[in-house]
Length: 331
Ligand SMILES: [Zn+2]
Image (cartoon, rainbow, N blue to C red):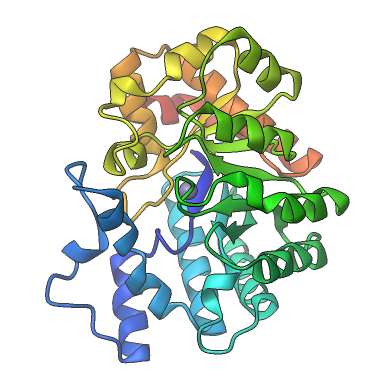
């Protein structure tokens, strides 16, 4: 009922695709809707990443970003979520001339409209820099995040193919984000090993996207704990991108035993054909999680979210009032 790692472009509903493709006169392909998902038999990371081509084509106008963000907020609220941090890379939405600033303002508009129409649900935005993008574009994303930090933009992220673009090249971007005191989460340790995660910590990451390949030696654990860094696990997505082989390979039990903060998320509701509730269900099944452990995982999501103090307080009380119903849906 909380998703801290959720990409907007990977989470358009089937209906969103239909509405936007009619508006933009862009064909959905003869395989639609099968071409918007992957299954757990997804052959490779390349096939997984191809699934973002079509949504990105459809999200190049401000009104389309507003529509998609509003739709996602409404869906999450309807599914019983109490909070989500929705992320996207504004620099991927400038192909038809929209500025990064305009793209983020459009998403904020959709977020606000959605929140107005729902009750008991809160949400914020995270802006992703991209590993393949130019330094200029990524620095612009940081500037936009700074400008809109009081308008639901709560953090910056670095996403993209980490094996091809290791983190050393991004120092200037993290330096600027730290100078502006922006919250930082970084995708790392999904396709690469522990060194990338440690590098992300050195660059100021407060959360790690995925991070399943953290080596659990004493020194690494001490580094993670010293900064109270939280891990955003996305189990189904990791199986599909071949980062892990099965749900039981997710190092959830090990992280819990070592006292490392960890959360369960979806990554992409449509591309991965999942949601954070279903992923939690898989974790309950694979690790025989107790009711207390499920409660602890969601409480960790609240504590390590980038929401403000009062929102966190409200979320903790919402969690306690809704927890029994939620637990029934995942056990
Ligand atoms: Zn991700």
